[in-house]
Image: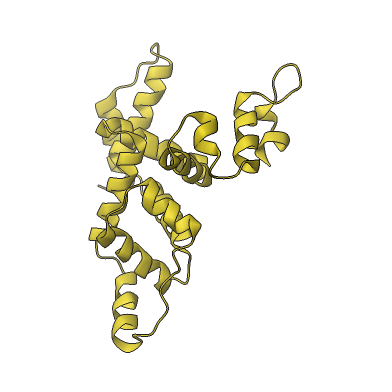
Length: 193
């Protein structure tokens, strides 16, 4: 567990710091108690849990994109998932085949994790049904499929993603001199654009 095993969550006096304590409470507390314990809504707790499931590089990319879009993280991820559901991908051919040739093909169960994803990001029915069909075609639980798609999206970095990362570095150390346009041109050249 993160609270006891991760040295980043140790206070200088050797105990567990506030982040480590929060991780311990989230790990051991029943789900109905968490919102009351932290003064959060259930949706906020689920969103925090889902973000913890994503690798740190993915979370960093998504936070930068959300900040650049001027949106809270939850709203940005909701829009990202809605855009993913609207875009046709290769897996949709498998979904279409299963619907046409095997109408009894099982759809994924809406377990607690799937319900948490749907409610945390307030996904409309048409969005989560597309994502659920794709998850079923992949033989994955919906929550795992959504996590995989967010990781994939973050890995498909754009020139703008790289520039946002440069901007973040400049915010941390304003003494650095980085020509944003030259950096963008170099990135485009390296990507063959």
